Image (cartoon, rainbow, N blue to C red):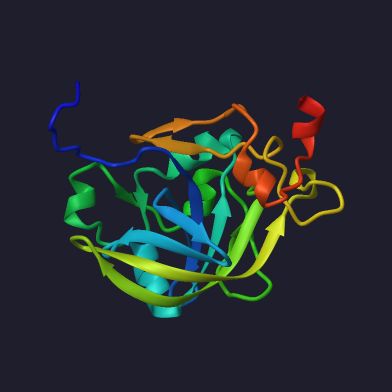
Length: 209
């Protein structure tokens, strides 16, 4: 039986990423988020307008998207109630957020220089995307959707299907947020017709069959 009920959140299962940005004075920031999706060589990023990350992307028009493996859940959680906004916005202060000027150190993460943009990468992330913000759209109440063009991708070679530019889906175990909790260690359920039609290399999937 389906109940007619308003849901407080709609996080049905999204990959967690760490967004690297710099403000107009060049100060680095890193922030977790899970409102991201990809199409082709672009990403759409949803952020609250009062966040420092959103302000940085709007002003500087650059960011890095650092995809998070399930093993980095602790580092992500150390960032969960931190903000680079000073003063802390009232809505965040009410939820227990506190100001932290050096979020990389607070999370135990390493700032890594990018090649094409000024925004920092996260060295511990095995998949890093350098991006340029090409458009910003109002979205919902007090939020914006940022279009990010992917300029360069950096992938740990242990994740690639040998001899290809494809990520091995068995080697890559993303940290996923479902209804504000962390999940990982996903398993392959069955062969995909979509993957077959797109001629996606199977990598470790063939060895696991």
